[in-house]
Amino acid sequence: MSIKDIIGNANSKKIMLSNVRDKKHGTAYIMLGEETIGKNFAARQFIKAFNCLNPAADSDCCDVCVNCKLIDKTLGELDEQGFQVNPHPDLCYVNTEKAQLTKEVVQEAIENLNTYKAIQLRKKAVIIQDADRMNESAANSILKVLEEPHKDVIIILIVNNIDSQMHTIVSRCRRIELQRASIAEIEKATGRIKPLWTGLEVKEAASFSDGKIGDSLRYIEVKQQFKDAAAIFSAVSGRKDNVETIFDAIKRVEELHREEKEKEKKLKKKGIARLFLLDIIKILSYIYRDYMLEKLGVKSVLRSRYGISSADVRDYTPVKISAILKIIERSCRDVEGNANVSVLFTNLLFQIRKEGLS
Ligand SMILES: [Zn+2]
Image (cartoon, rainbow, N blue to C red; front, side, top):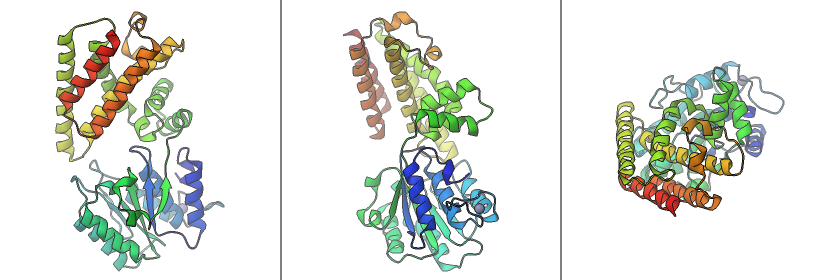
């Protein structure tokens, strides 16, 4: 894989390649973009291009020389918790299982890289995963390094939200921003990366991804959640007016959320439970989006998945559906704001029900 394999994002790829060509390239970069959009992958290809022994005419990496292979092995093979399993003195991947990335973790990585001459690579590199989670003292120690850059060390901060960074850091980094790709581009890439998936699975995955490759690739994992979401949905759908079933659905979400929390503890991996809630809500929004498509006379890919009869759609006008979609969208923000699960879903389902009955 190389920079050209980054999906979509033609402009950002151009910026990366021109930095690789430029003798006065930056030494610090912010790789910015939404979760699961492919920032780590892009950062790795970027570092490969800086170090490739046999680059293409446009400066992209060859993917097969010893340096390209070393970087893929060292920065690409991570354990379940997202930690480096193949350390190398020229390359450092900084991650933490804690809620905050502390100064000690960041400093250790940077000191090592700054002290020694590169053993094999031309440009040593440090990737700081989840730079959004740096606490103030960690950010300050990064800032110190950025103020006295080392020309043979490249630092890449992986950032979901630019507002999480101090402006003094932002102003010292070059910014590479990744945008969502088109569904067609995602479908093509997913088919290539997952050759064993059926055509239908690839199509569904791309549709689920909303343009984020990471979401497309974990589609098979979340398939079960479609069933859960459909069950939750059935509590508020159609002309059913049974408050009991809504409370049962909320209980079910709480139960599943608890299971995800357990998994989070066991794997020492933050964010699994939150991602689960977002998935459920996202799938709910798909169901209503499919309703809309049905109303417009378009047969959707996902529709067959829920076992929802056309009779259920009859009472929903496009206006009603778009009102419900807005309610669902708002609840995504509540998940980000760490609202209580029970309160969040009680609000969400009763609001949907109210809109549905109106
Ligand atoms: Zn190479």
